[in-house]
Amino acid sequence: MALADSVPSIAGWRDTEIPATMTPADVQRLLASCDRATLGGARNYAIMLLLARLGLRSIEVARMQLEDLDWRAGELEVRGKARRYDRLPLPADVGAALAGYLSLRGKCRSRHVFLTVKAPTRPIRADLVGDVVQRGCLRAGIAHVGAHRLRHTFASELLRHGASLVDVSQLLRHSDLATTAVYAKVDLGRLRQVARPWPGATR
Image (cartoon, rainbow, N blue to C red; front, side):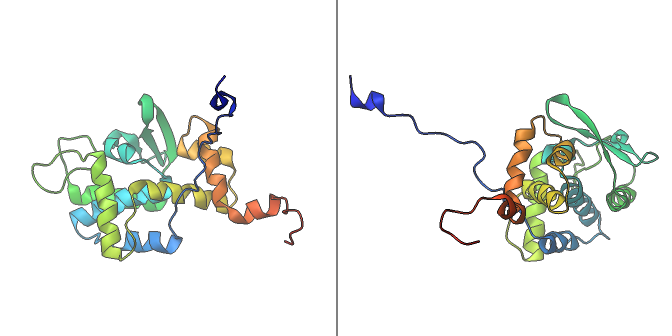
């Protein structure tokens, strides 16, 4: 028998990396970079606020339609993965940003909320959401990040302010709690409290 057959396989661990996040100050600089008096700036501000305040995915932002906004109930229906529909609370600042954009956008035949600024007017694609974030980073003078970085930041800030993993999982609309558990590694302060000291080391 070949000796190689007796060598145990190397363990493969899932989700070993720590999710990259942004500082709250950089998020504010990113949002402040939008000129909300213009149609494009109002649209981009509303898009990035949805990412930062509700942790939406790019595709969920692009799919959003007017009937998904329940102004009376203060809720937003999210068209997620695998034709999944979830209702989330609509924070006042996000609702105000959406209303401001829609008032500048005016009436349109499309039922999609977010449309291109330049003609021909049509619903935005998911990749444009990432472009909006990257152009915002350039204006704000911060390191370029993708749209998903705002989702990571949203989850990490929730945990930092005392939310449970179950709460975060529900808000992120994860089907498996293990997917959310990766964010627990971001809260290094709590991890230090529960970590056992290395033998012979002082804490």
